Length: 173
Image 1: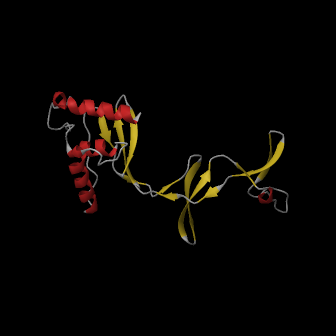
Image 2: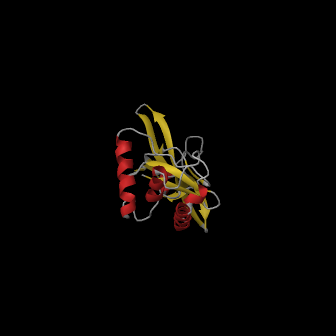
Image 3: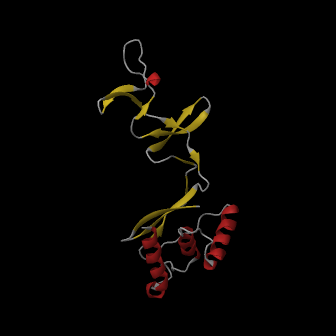
């Protein structure tokens, strides 16, 4: 999917002169579009010499507090920059809660996981508190939703890039 999006975007750059109908339409060779293309490279944003100047400029502009460059044109759009500090493994979702220690993030499994039987306990009324016994494959297993610490992303900023008819990709930086 990534290679298809990159190929489609490269084709759009090659044919950009056909799309230049007015000044209100973004050119495929604009700085913002170059940045999106370079950041979406699986080999890294600085792999190709043509990407080094726009990416170097991007890091400099972001360090000064400027916004992520825009890239909108014929059948190509980039969302506003967003930020997600934490990540969870597949099968887990990120949750946040507020406690006396402030806001806390955690990863909670999307389905109950098998845990030690010592974790299945009941209150005085006989109701399961956080775990439950299930019968799976003829065996009785203690299962509950598991909570883990989230990972801190090395690249917490992202934009969503959409190429009409091709798909959408999230580019992390």
